[in-house]
Length: 109
Length: 115
Image 1 (cartoon, rainbow over the protein chains, first blue to last red):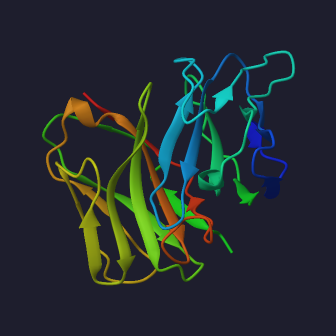
Image 2: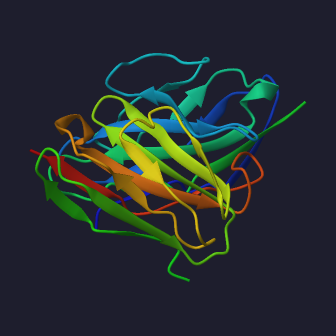
């Protein structure tokens, strides 16, 4: 079955330390991939798309087709990065889109 | 628990037709929302509800109506379908206003094609 996995439900990182939120997918072909973020008491919002190759708020994510991963990274964590992060591949064709279960990131001051 | 369920899974409409996308959750969540996801644009919020009888607009509400007569159900109505509404629609729910403290649970999605 096609699926996306975020193995860490909770992740705590000290301020200034590097952050990596893991996302693995099992889809055939090359899905378009997104990371979404939800800050406290705010709505879900798009953080970045792998196609655009942008760096949003210092975050980047590289698609590794060999490992079928799309990990979200930031070299130096900031307190305002505390949020819920969802990985979401968008497959081609008629395959069902599945969101990851989310990782709750807490930045320790 | 079934979690968040959506029906139908796939629908084809002609321009001008109306239809209702169903969403239900059995987790007694107060907060429910509808998103659409378009290629290259990510999720966009259509409407949301913070409890039975209370709804509000999101980022792209035009062309859609919602109601929340019960805690469990949050249907999305397309009044007069347009090709621009071709998209994948997701319903989501959470115990409270989603954020760091609350996980948002998503339905499997409804893929809509408007011809």
